[in-house]
Image (cartoon, rainbow, N blue to C red):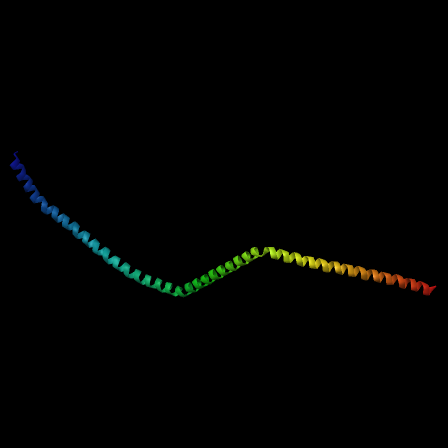
Length: 148
């Protein structure tokens, strides 16, 4: 077999097989396009049903906007109260630390005043008790002398 005969035979075989392969490829292409169209149709139906679901979810979310805004406002108020109380506490502690010496002096002076008043009351009570005892003794002596 010569090269010319081989090429001629290959050309003949290819000429007969090429339409068969083309028809097979065309059949597969038609099947592929039909399945693609069916997929697109089902996808479109799914998107339409999802659209109604998403619309319903969107309405529910819109209904929650007002309560969420209220919660956000409450949270902001709590944050503001916390910041204000923290600021007041810091200023109170700062003032207390700055004035601790005068505060201690004031407490000590007050304690000294209380001690002085307590001592004065004790002395006064002791004198009163002594006077009462003296009067009782004197009265007792008078009663004894009267009885005799």
